[in-house]
Every structure is written in structure tokens, then in C-alpha cells.
Image (tube, rainbow, N blue to C red):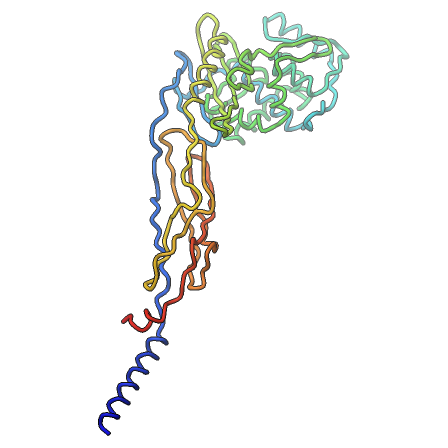
Length: 397
């Protein structure tokens, strides 16, 4: 009798234990990340062949700067000014790609301006009273042979007067954040038109977003009704992927060149924008053009394509005490164009983990900052998160 009672008690206690173990709450899955917050890519950018005089800066769009030389103080801009002139005209009178835009009729005042500019040895393109130019042709005259008289003609056509147009130029400079750039007239002949190389890079990037501007500065030559064939002063066009943008040369300014180039680096497209102001010497503009070619070739050779991580890279684990950890992985690879020594920052954003999480479940995103660029990579579970096993429930105390 006593023995049966003992057995009954033991059975009852065992049943109670099993009920307690099966009924008690189990630990929530824990997500443990182990990515570093920051890392620096190996290597460093080699010294570029900077101009011996003046100031220069080069950057790769979206990738970062390759450095600068000579400082970044405001210098006379010469005909680099005409980038802003063209940008204002296209802002106020947009032209759809492949079209010519409205017609501009050359006035007697336009011809008088041409004759005065010619007499003072300025860069000009011939016009005649009653000549009809499309807006696109007027921009070709402005940007290719760098005709100062076309700058004044377009300013009056756009704003009614040169002074009103110049006010717009300075307002736009402020809007674009060109804090060290100031204009007094639209052609660049006056050395009081000043700016820094970094400002001019920013301006060129904004102007190249306009397809009409980009189309004009990429032309080696054009034909105008009275002036005939006009050549692009940019002799670098087509060299080392150079697609423009604007030259300038004047006694106070020296040689100036704001340039852009496109090439592929290991299959990845790259766009470089640079500016040289204040080149000196016997032929300052030629020096600026030659230096731009050397800088472009050297800059592209500095770029690398790097796979920061492949698809399936483990960035975290989901841990439960009754099973092996379940990896959280990247759903795709991330390959980027970079400069050596670039800082990379990782910021994962994980979703909550539950016991019903299944393989390939969305587990959040990994934000990756590479220089100035931001990327977002999906994260998924590489396996299912299992519920507790019976043996674990009964044995874990």
C-alpha cells in the first residue's frame, strides 16, 4: 500500500513537473549583430599631376574628391562665367532635347555690341541685323567659340537688360551654394567675375544635368547663319573621355578650364568633374587644357571597383538556446566604385524576430555609406527559427 502511494506521488510530481515545463514561457529569440560600424578601405589616392600655378580641384561624382592644389580662393573666371549664363537662359527658356527652341532676332544694338567687342579684341562671333538664331544656335555661339557678344545678346533677350540678367546670375549662385562666386557681367571679360574651383565644379555638375547644355558643350563645332562654322575652343574634347565643359582665358584670369569626363572602370561608369583657374605661362589656356588631360587620366587610374560583400554575407545571428544559431544574411551583393582609403559605414536596421520566422523572411535592411553615397541592402534569414524541442523543454531548468 505504501509502495503504491509512493509510486502515485512520484507520478503526480512527474506529471506536475512536465506540465510546468511545458507550460512555462520560453526565452525570446535574440538577434546578435557583429558588423563593424566603420571600416576604411585599403590604400590611398596617389598624388595627381596638379598644375604648377593657379588653383585646381578634381572630384568623381558620387564617389568623392581626389584633392586640390593651390588653395580655393576666388579668382577671375574669364569665360568660365558663360556656364552660368547658359544655365540661366536654359532655366528661363527650357529646350526639349533634340529641339531648337524659340527664335532670337539680332538687333542693331546686338551688332553694335559685336563691333565694340571686336574692336577691343574680345572673343566674338559675327552677327548681322535681322539675323534669326534659334536659342540652341545662340547657345552654340556662346559656349563653343565663347563669343562675348552672344553673352550680352542672350542676357538682354532673357531678362530685358544685362544688369537684370546679372542679378539673376548672382541669385542662382546663392541658390546653388556657390558662396565664393560673384558676377558683374555675363561674358567673363571683366576680371571682377570671380569664383573658386570648387564652386565651378558644383556649377558644372548642375549645368550638365540639363541635356541641352550637355549636348552643346560636347559638340566640336557648329554652323551659325552669319558666323558660319565655329569651333569649340575646348581642344580636349574626346580625349580621355572628356565631354566638355568650358574654357576661359583672359590676362587677369590666366588660363581656366572646367572639365568633365566619363569612362568605365571595370565595367562601372564614372563621371569626373574638375576645375583649373589661374594657369599662367606663355600659353595659359593651352597649359590648362594639357593639365586637365593629365589630371583626368591620373584620376581615372586611381578608381577601383570593390565588392564590399557578396550575396549571403552573414551580418548577424538569431540565437535560441535549443538550436544552432540562424544566420541573417545579405540578399544581394554590393559592388561599388571607390577611391582607395574611402571610409565605409554600416548601419543595420533589423526587424523583430519571432519563433515563426521562416527561411528567406525579411529581416530588415543594411544601410551602407560609402563616401558621399548611400546604399540599402535587404537582409533575410538564412534558415527558419525553430520552436523549442520537447527534450529541451523537459530538461532545461
